[in-house]
Length: 251
Length: 74
Image 1 (cartoon, helix red, strand yellow):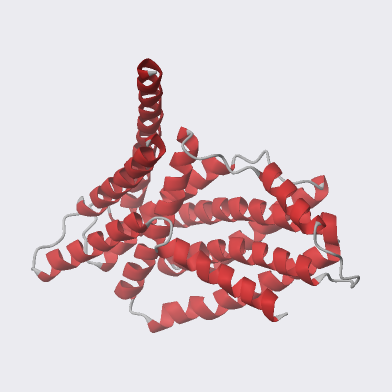
Image 2 (spheres, chains in turn purple, yellow; image 1 turned 30 degrees about the horizontal axis):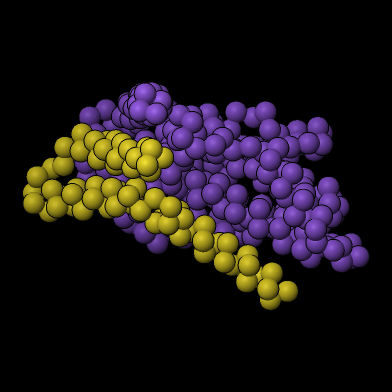
């Protein structure tokens, strides 16, 4: 059960982050050429792979399982809460939705204002593409490391993340445009809910909380947090309507 | 070159700052409360009830969002 949930969480997280990374890579490719963009992405992926290869086994072999679960649980909880919080704010209209088209246009504009170095690989373009790919990839690495090490599926998690990235980049490159139609916020909400469920479960396990249904409690936690997230979106929406009505009647 | 590397390092540092405290210190505080509470219960010889962790998470999320709502309304 937990293997499939881990795979789904890693695949969704990787898809969301790679869509964001691809937008930046495409903007750099459009203005500075594909060679700059691809070489920066490949370098960032290599650095990220080294991080997973070093930190993954180190985490597994150095820390006792209870300590590992507590630390990983807490990091997953904080990380997941950030994702859920942002997704709820966006769904309720309190925060603007992530707009890949706008990001693409902004990146292209910024890149166009810098001079081309004349080299095969442009240094400014390389830095922008590397930063974009590395930072978006780092979020995936954290999810792969936390979900992978604690569930004992580090290899499966890593392969899932890489395959998802390949699919996203493949589709993006075939279409030759940013993937703005991907329902990013819904995916982010789903991953966030899964992360806080795993985070709650593992931090509890590490601190010797006895879960009534053992591993199956994760499903219960996912259902609980999904319901709470839905209710919070409705609460924020209705609070905004009430506030707007109060203001219009006051004026 | 040095400027580029420094920019990348700054972005990475800012990424971790935002992740753990920067944007939403309330979330980290809520999670810290959860850990301290569970450790205290455990050290006190009382096995921690499983309802506490999800309850703390939901309350933390609720107050964090309520804070955002108040900020937007003011």
